[in-house]
Image (cartoon, rainbow, N blue to C red; front, side, top):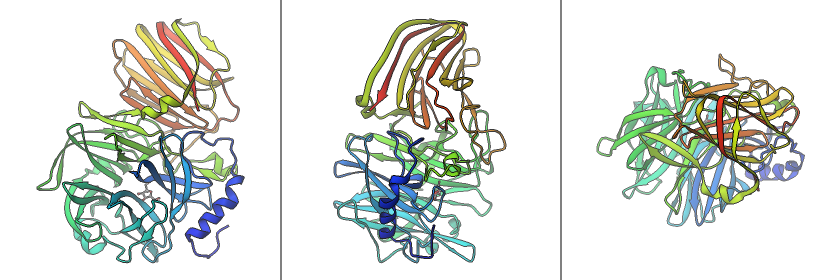
Length: 494
Ligand code: FRU
């Protein structure tokens, strides 16, 4: 499909217009961001700019598998309905010729600046540098003549120029800073900080944080902000070691919560944890909006996984999570769906005081592609409560809570096409502890055509994708002992 012809913006935009009509809609999300055609990975340049939310993303229009990265672009007024915009960046300069890798956005004097990684491969040797593009209208971007603005001279011995990427730019007390991912010479993750007065001339500032051997061979996509009195670094470690119920994916996401010392430029970490317990969550990036909300969005996928849609010739891959509002509680990051999503709900069914025991309670034809569901269940007299979701014959997603171990389980085993990954273990089930609140389990479920996001007791989240072979629409409740479902509501997301 791809010739030696140059990868320009014009070519990408033309290709999209010609080909987006051919994308197979079967598994396409209805309210999660995905590319109009082709491959999407990390969110980039997530920013609130001139009254609208802008979201850029790692994008390869020409195939449903990863290729030389462009930046796709969409904007929204409510974080739910997105308008597709022309491609913002193409790999068309010597310093980004093999890809415009991940990065971020910031407004300065009314103009929108994108800071991204220029990825170059010469004789199998990768060089990564940080570059800037700027726009007056938030749509058309011009790369700076001074690019790359951060390269090997500024990084010096503090990291590897072969793995030096994903700048997240922010302002602190009038100075611009950028956190950038790199690694140590013995292959540990490392986050470095650069500073600038004008976004053009940069200097090395500090090493923000360095990982241990167990914490992965490289940290990708850092983001750094202050929230609820804490300084928070989020990033995506490659091959971080499993620890109990955490970090079971080949690559994971980690939140480090602590205090920043702006004199030394070092973060003292008081607690760290995995951000989402699902099989498909990576590279989260946040913004601060006009309501002072810290909102995060992530790629709802994982590297090295199988894509049934690719083999079936569907011509697209990848979507984002719902945008979620972040808070810090007890030194943990808490994620809630943004409030805007609730005004998109069209109420369908509601039941109060439903008693569930060992006899299954079945609802036929309840689950749709865009079902939202809230369940408040009292488990004080139950040892176990389970849900079979989107059931069809013996195929269903399984949600289960065990009271004795306070463990929640989510499984997509035997549900649609089998999904495989580079992980040693299967990637179909995750388990994690979560405490009941006054003996109650409170679940909020957001289902889209090929994904589910489950918010458990307002504390933990699981994000996962699936590809049904036959659509399932039944829902089954089951309990060991007595579960009292105080309220059970379903809606669709418009
Ligand atoms: C993370 C990542 C980034 C890189 C981009 C390339 O998913 O590997 O580190 O910039 O994807 O598409």
